[in-house]
Structures are given as structure tokens and as C-alpha cells.
Length: 408
Length: 193
Image 1 (cartoon, rainbow over the protein chains, first blue to last red):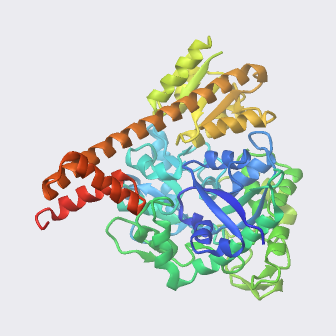
Image 2 (cartoon, chains in turn cyan, brown):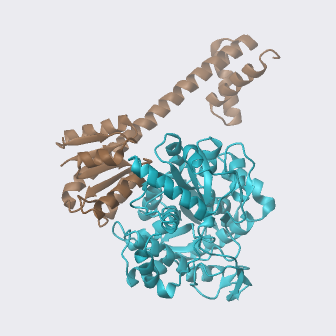
Image 3 (cartoon, one colour):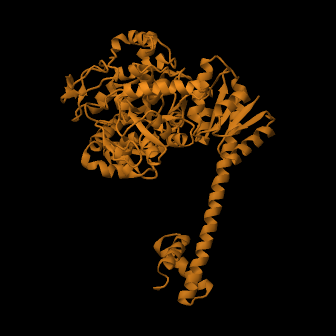
């Protein structure tokens, strides 16, 4: 086995865990792969380094990988997503002032109830000429689309009733602290850091909006001369083993200690540990509450790149006019996710390999079995908070309905 | 051609703008990093934006440009992809350029090349500064270690230095490292020695 070195770009976030652990714990080395991790502070920088060959792969928000591959805001660069690094793990955190106005208590409330109160507050703020401002981590981020999906679902028009701005994750808590924004949607540990600093309060987990929402992915370039399919497959296998290790409860503390190091997240390990063990402290000084599957890294073939997940994200990009509403767009987005590479990389291992490459998203109100080539695949509850389902075979109808249905 | 420079380091912004001026590009706007970035750019209406790759405002800037396009106003986008080589060199040097859509490639190329050279010059300056600081710190540690050895062991200065040097050579470490260890242990247990 030849010894290949791959450079992987990442942002300091808990869901960069798998490439970090694959490197630190020797899973990559077992595959004859040397990893070099390259940290940045904005998604634009992570993307640029990947596009111009300074990195071979990247930890990336899923919609940005799709936007880059399809050329939504610039000339297209062929990217592929052979592995999903995790589902959910983000939260909506609001300033303590807004938390008081919304009468939040020490629980993750009901998205509809909080939404109704937020709608009143948003209208009040528009009336006094200071609309509510929310920060998301990139235009093409799951955070942006999860926030917009929830707002629209509770009758708040994202482009009219509030302002949505962009702030990179390590600066999200600062933006809250100085009053630049009233709320942020960001990944961990940055919500918890805002809470511990006393500048914010966690309002909802994104898992409450879409129970199995695709979050970060591994993006690779396929056209570059150094695109090495064999190396990519070895990386997928190393990440698969890192994921299995990551979700073992007995490894949680050691993993958090690694992630907390200055070259990775540079954040307190107990803050990281709360996120990775689904125990979330909502407000400063309170006990952490347990919210199962707050972040979801491995079970139920969570790392499998379902084409339907890419298509759902595209439906939201098109819904908010960040991408073209067309069958061709949906087909293009679906092709960015590469279940075929996942399957060929993990054939002959203990990994569960789903038989299909797409599914109806949000269809399971209870766990249900699904076909698989190897292993037994049970898919858990995966609903959207409004119980609407996304059928990838009827993507244009879904989009049409979302664009035209009257706001509540 | 109006060029906006966004940089968290005022020194670097100055180095870049000096270079651009020397090249005859005098219509420059230097933009404060955080405060009202979008408004400032809107007001300046530049044809080219130069920004540090590590600038935390880059995601915000891209969002702003994308929204401007939707509103059919002057459009900005990333440097022409067809010239991957110089774009790659720019990323390598740490500079990102956003250019107004339709700006001829031959017009942006010299600006970008110049920005790359200036960014590299800045990195060299930074490296030299760090080196100078380290050298100074090393010098101080060695002087203090010599003083400690002279006092503790009753040596003269050349002998104290020779002792340091020999120990460094034997243990395959830098003289400054040995000196630091001596200074640290003196600080910790000076009374016990």
C-alpha cells in the first residue's frame, strides 16, 4: 500500500471530529494515509483552498459543496461528496434580551410555540424600525436553510420580517455579545461558548426542525490531476472507523480532550463533551439537559450520502432564490452526493450499505427497516417539524408548494 | 479603476496601497474591517476588492455580493476561474480578489500580480520580525544564564559561555534552550541550589 498524504481543510467545530480523530488515532495511518489538517476561520477560505488545490479534501457545510459544484455564485468546480460527516448538532442561540422577551425557560421548547412568540416580537421590532437580525455561518449553509425553514413554517418571512446576516462560527458569540445580531444559528461548541460567556441562551436545536438533517460533509475535488480515487476510498474507510470510535460512549472524554487542543478547536474540553454527549446547557449556570441525538454521527448509516438529502437542500436553495428552480438543478445537486464511492470504499467491511441511493425524507415517524446490501439498516425518526415530507421523485411539486402556499 | 482594500492589519493594507499607488493605481479605498462592511463597500462602489484570505468577513462579503447580484446592481464575483494559475498563486499568498463582473481579465491581472507580491513582502516582513524577536529573546536568556553560572560556579564569562555551548552540543540542543532551562530552574529553585 503506497503512502499518500492528504491535506484536509476544516473549521474549528465539533463536527470536524471525524477527520481529526482519523488522524490522531491512527485510522488513516492504518489505510496508508497521512493526513494534514488545515484550519481556517471562514467557509470561503476552506472552499478556496479546496478549489485551488491547497487541500485535497474539506470538512464543509453541505449546501456550500453543492453551490460550488453547481456554480451557483461563480464558475462551477466539480466537487464530490462521498461521505457525510454528521447530521445536525447545530442550535439557535439568542441574546439574553431576546430570550427574556420570548419568555424562554430551561428547556428546549416547542418550535411552534416559540415561533408564535417570535413572530410577535419580530413584528414589534419591525414597527420600531429595528428588525430582528439573525446570524448564520454562510449564505450556502444548512444553518441558513434550517433557520429559514423554521421561520417560514411559523409564519415569519425570512426576507421581509427579519434580517439574516452572515458571521463565521468563531465570531458568532462575539456578534451576539456586541449586539450585532439578536440570534445566531451555529454549530458547537460556539452556542455553548455563547451560553458560558453569559451572552446567549440556546433556544432550539436544529434537530428539532429536521430530526435527521444532513450537516457537514466531506468534499473532494474530482477533476484535479491529483484526484486519486484510491486515496479517497481509503479516507472514507478511515472516517468510517473514526465515526464508530467517536460514538462509543466510553471514548467521549478522550475524544473531547483531543478536539479541545489549540491546533483543532482551541476550546474547553468540557464544553465540547457536552455537545458530543447530547447534554446541552441552555443558559449560564443551569444544569445541562439531555437531548438525545442532538448531534448524530454514525448509527443508521448516517454517513451515507443520500442523494435525496442533497436534493432537499437544493429545494431550499431554490426556494429562497439562491439557486435556479429547475429539474436540471435538482439532478445536478443529486449527482454531487456520491453513494457509489461510499459503497465501493466500504464494500467488504462491517459498514451498513443501503440498497437505495435516495429515500423520502421526513417519512419516518417511528423507526423503520430499510433495504441494505450488507448489515441490517433501521432508519429512525426523521421528520421535519411541520411533518411535511420530501419525495425526491416529486421535487418540483414540493418546491412549487413551498413557494406558493400562503404564509400562516 | 477603483480598488477597495479590506484588511484587519493596517500595516499590510498600507504596504498594498503603496504598491498600487506606485503602479499608478491611485483610486484606492481602505475599508475598516468589521463596522458596516456592506455599507462601506456600497458607498465606495469599487471595481475590485482585495481582501486577506484569513479575514473573518469573507463569508459576509460573499453574501453581500450575491445579494447585490440578485438586485441587479453592480456585480462582484470571484476572480476569473479561467486563470486558475494566478488565482491559485493569490490564494497561496493569502490574498483573495473579488472583481466586478465584466472587468477585462487583462485589467485585473496586473492588480492581482501586484497584490500577490505585496502580500508576500508582508509575510517576509512578519517572518523577519518574528525572527528578530526570537533572536533578542535568545540573547537575553543566554546573558541571564551566563550570569547565573558565573555566580553559582564562580566562572568568568568565557568559561560560562563555553559550559553552555558544550552542554548544548552534547545534548544536541540549541544554546538558547539550555539557557532558558537554567533561567527557569533558577527562578523555581534558586534558593535550593
